[in-house]
Image 1 (tube, rainbow, N blue to C red):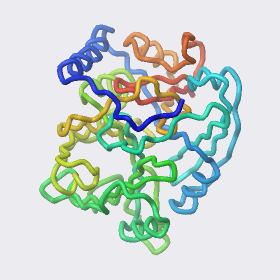
Image 2 (cartoon, rainbow, N blue to C red; image 1 turned 90 degrees about the vertical axis):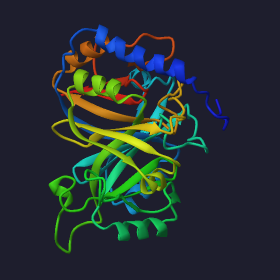
Image 3 (tube, one colour; image 1 turned 90 degrees about the horizontal axis):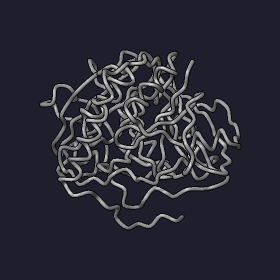
Image 4 (cartoon, rainbow, N blue to C red; image 1 turned 180 degrees about the vertical axis):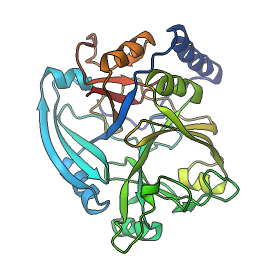
Length: 345
């Protein structure tokens, strides 16, 4: 069904607060969380409209390396993605130790990213690509004529000790997914982002994927207490630099990051202001171009699924069908609707 550009409805403040409280209450009523010990955050995936075009952009402009392509069709794909009669083609791309999976739906194409999408909408998600030189990275993106999502690269102010000195820039890929390039000053970021020498690549890897959340505590109850990811950082960011980075006037964000033992982090962006971001579309499907998913890999797959079922998490399946819990991979939604793909070693 074509997607219109009409604003998506938002709940009034009072019902929205009740919805957040209800989601958190369900997690608490499920009993003590049994963290299943997620071993790794794996490939981050997004849906694209033209696989060849998207692959070429990520390889030629952002320095990713192709690592295979495959086509899928059949009931397993349908139940995993929630899209009946789907046929997909996927390309896996590697940058440093991290990977992306870009998927084109050859059958049952979905809706595009809305033209009025905003960084504080709760279906917002991006990946943060670490660069060794922000000036060179921005120049390369300008040469590629990318669409700006930020006014330009922003350096976060020194008054914010946890983020001060970090440089970042938001832009859009050919399908209008938001991406971030990020540069870490000495003393911030992982040690591997601080390589020296003349042969250091311009793009180094993926530090994290960021998702907008409505309630940080509810997200921590899901990711930390149910999935077993560890809290890895906190900050509260505001000011003109943050506003111009996100393209949201008056932006004030509570930022919390969680990580597994391996793979990129998952970063929660809770907008303390403005709080007018639109909710995650209730009818989102894997074929929609604004769809993302994150692979979550655990040696304790059955325990992971049981914990999430106890918390009444929303599993993805074909509309009208019941999800099958017999085997992984299996997709589940976090409290705000973002999709995780559960896999077992």
